[in-house]
Amino acid sequence: MIKKILIFGFIIFFNQTFLSTSYAVEPDEVLKNNKEELRARKISKNIRCLVCQNQSIDESNALLAKDLRILIRNKIQEGKSDKQIYNFLTERYGDFILLKPALKLNTLVLWLLPFIFFIIGIFFVFQHNKKSKKI
Amino acid sequence: MKKHISKLPSIIFLIISLVFLYLLIIERNPSEIPSALLNKNIPSFVTESLLKNEKFSSKNEFGKEVVIVNFFATWCKPCRDEHIYFNRLLNEKKIKIIGVNYKDDSLKTTKWLKSLGNPYSNVAIDKKGKIAIDWGVYGIPETFVVNSKGVIKYRHVGPINEKIYKEISLILNKIK
Image 1 (cartoon, each protein chain N blue to C red):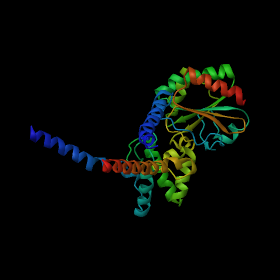
Image 2: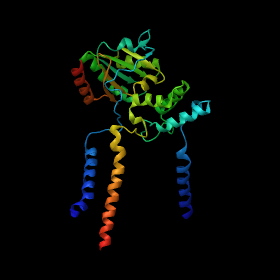
Image 3: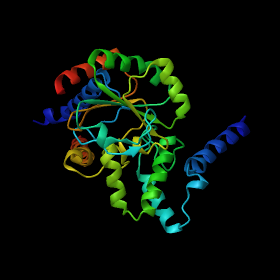
Image 4: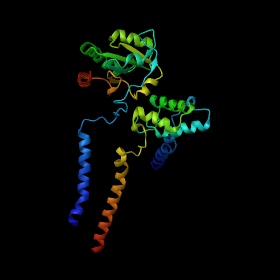
């Protein structure tokens, strides 16, 4: 029984550490220029796969993800800068396509709320501690 | 004062729960992405035409009247389901409808249109899906309403049903 659990645990561990980091980039997509390929991979990791939502296009096997990966590589070969490529994508798919939302006026709440909640939390912990010391 | 402060976490928790409850109750599709192209000019393109012997050029097709654009493919089942609504739009609204045939076989599409009826005044061929990416399309079928100035006024992701048909009719009455 214990052996079975151990094997099961090992499979899960293996899955999590190795398989989840596997990428969907296919050999025919890879650029010959190593530097350019690295740039493409870096951009792809920041671009959301729109049909799978919580994967980047670098990890997704979806057809649209593949199309976008090829598009990014074509743009790099055309000599476009990273910023130009990100702009091209957000102009068409909105900020939603970026896995990390940009710091803008309309995303300010999203970025600041965790810190505000954190400060409020600390405040309450201190209040609570004060009370318990008195007792 | 202190008594009130100790109640604060519960109040914040209650407010957050209410927000979540509200988001659960309202009719909302989280997989639907708001279009970045709304109220912007259509992305222009030139490609092959399925119905005509000349090139399909967006410059010739848009900017004169209200146009409905439908991204479709014969391999997409929901496209077949929504097709009757385009026939209806053409008959009832006398509106110009343009199809964009997404990653499809032209011969199959011609047959498909023969058997289901062809509501499209012209069909652009998007063999590699490049036009779709330019239009911010992420899942076909998708439908756009473009006004007479060539500006995108409406976008729907997914097949058209009775409800969406009414929504589009309302928009068509509004923009003209």
